[in-house]
Image (cartoon, rainbow, N blue to C red; front, side, top):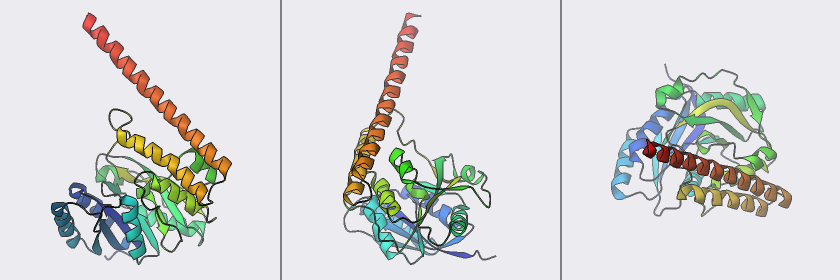
Length: 281
C-alpha cells in the first residue's frame, strides 16, 4: 500500500560522512508518512566522499543532491537546502543521526493539534544502539506536547537540530559563518516571531555519539560553548533578547560549564586515588 505523502522536505547536510549517510536516508524513506522530497547538501566534501554520496542519493527515492563549491558549515548547508525546499515544512537530519519511523507522522499531528500558526515542532532525542532500538520506543498517537518559552531557551537549548521540523516560509535562517551552536541562535530568532514552538515529549531521534566525548570536554566542546555565548549575543543584537535576558542566559551557561568542570575534576581525582590504591596492593 502506498504511504500518504506529507508536505515535508527532509534536509541532510553532508560532509565526508558516507559511512552513515545510507543509515540516515533509510530512516527517512521508512517513515510512516512519506516525505515529499529529500535534499542532501554536500558541503564541499572530498572528491571520493562526494562520489559516494552521489551514488547513495541516486539510489534513494525522492532524493536529490546539491553540491556546494566551498565548505560553509552545517548551518549554511541547511540554509541552502531550506531555500530550495518545496515542502510546506522542512525537517533537518544530521547525516550521523536517525529518525524514529513515526517521527514525521507524530510531528504533523502535533502541529495540527496546536493550530495553524505553529512554526516549529521538536521532539526528544538520545543515544541508541541501532535503528531497531529507536523504533522499539513507544510513541502514542497523541503524544504530550509543551509550548516552548523564552525562559526555557535561556536555561538550555531544548531542541536537537535533528528533531526540528520548521515552516519553510518563515523569515529566519541559520546565522551565516557560524559552525558551533548556530542552531540555538536560530531557535531564539524563531521564538521572537511570537508563534507557537512546541516540543513532543517522546524520543523521535537517535544519535550514536556522546556529545561530550569519552573523556569530558574536548576542544570541539569548548568551541561549542563559545558558540553558545555567541548565540546569546547574536540573538540580542537581532532584537530577539533583551540585554538582561542575554546576561541571564550567559550566566546560566557559565554555571553549567563550571559544574561540568567540577564533575570532570572529581572523576579524574577518583581515578588517580584508585590507581594509587591499586599500586599499594
